[in-house]
Image (cartoon, rainbow, N blue to C red; front, side, top):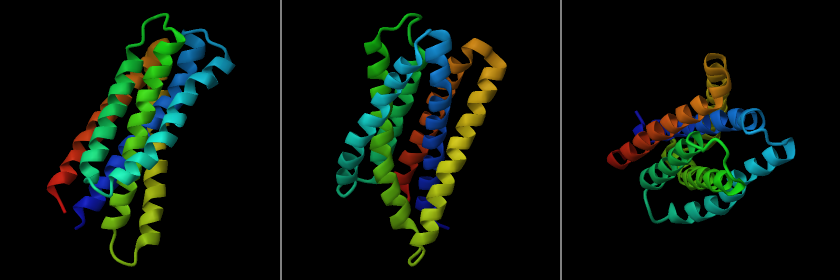
Length: 188
């Protein structure tokens, strides 16, 4: 009955599944495959969050002038590309190789979140903003849970290559979310 609301929630689930896949698999990848320390691993995870804090307000301002479907689609495209680039890291990547890929993921994730939240809240039925907020929280939890569970499955299936498989799967979820986001340009 409310396609904009439904598509926006579905894209949120996809974005948080990508995040779950990345945040569960990457520490294992950095430590077990690349033989980095725990401190280095924490350092490598940081660019994602830093870039999200920079991009989210910018995307929020842009969402006042441009459709959420377009902004969200571009954000999820970037997120998916970042995940694919992480999956294709060379066997002995430099610090910079890792950081710029994580920054691309953060840019995409941050660029998606604000416009999508605005789309969800503005397409919710009048007087139902509390319920819509609850659905946002549920979508976040469902997406992160799906991502974490799939990351665990990837490790069970592919052992040391599990992280790479999880990152590639995250790229797929980013692409799926991107398509769903652009579909919002056709609905009201």
